[in-house]
Length: 415
Image 1: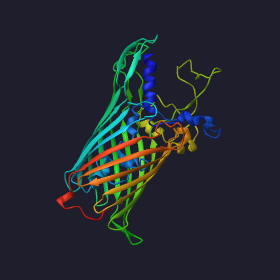
Image 2: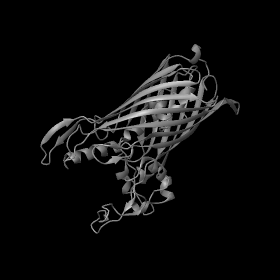
Image 3: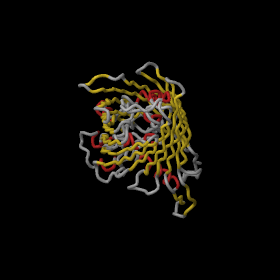
Image 4: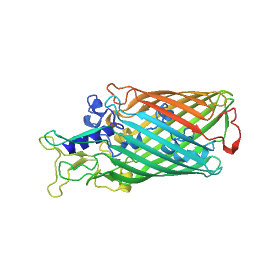
């Protein structure tokens, strides 16, 4: 029973990245992997949850959006282009509220400019999974535990030119899902621990004329969570290594009005589950000589190292190139700011994922206000599919700015 509880915890967390795969399965045609849902699952998927209301309101774009204290999550390279001396942020997100009432994601972070071309930063992400009751095989309560996971980041970003920057974030990850309870198979459980890095690149153009308006283009490329596998007992699992590519365009309509549009594409750099040969009763066939399951399509996604797994992830889908393309999810977002300096923002976005890979499809919306050095943002998630565990998700963000770079007063125009 304890092993089943551990699996339930892991499944609940995985809903954050494959929210409605089960709902989608009844809607598949024979053209979609012969009716198979084939989501990619990893350990510690909380690392992929967008922590803040700003990007959360824009369909979870973030590779090329305006730099802020949340950039350590989205693209660490953006920090070098901040026009502030520094900043801090506090984020709170009630998660999967349609399923359970006590799962929360907390994220705090901050950064500082140490020169005109360099920035440093740090962040802490804490994921609380609520209270879990452990029972024995006959249902007797054996204990209570509150599973939790966290990640601690240290970041550095450097301008390489007037328009280009690079960044690196080092991450320590700890996941405690069982509180060291012994599993039903007699194996002792333990907290999972590993380390990872993010590597980001960011481009921000100089201002240029666009139909008589001042405009700025941006682009970002991020390799995130590149690190070792994690284990809770014997088996080791991949963490959610991810590739994010995005671009954006910001247009200053006039002194008081600014409009921006952004788009991102994401792909997990984790091997895709293969298709196994089935026995007459529907279970997976096993090679008696090796003890391994017999693969009929795709590649082994378990007995492979991290570097090989990253390379393999771009060409191992059982359905070939068409399935590989389905593993890319897309998001687009828009943002409107009013004020000189910025006072009020309205945001909206859309996120799309293939139905065989999780079927997350939702709209987002949100608002933001700024007063002096303080800001408050809120976002709201509106799913397209019914019975979506992510529906009505709210995110809240409180930001603090530590002054403009060089100590100058804030300009009336924004770029």
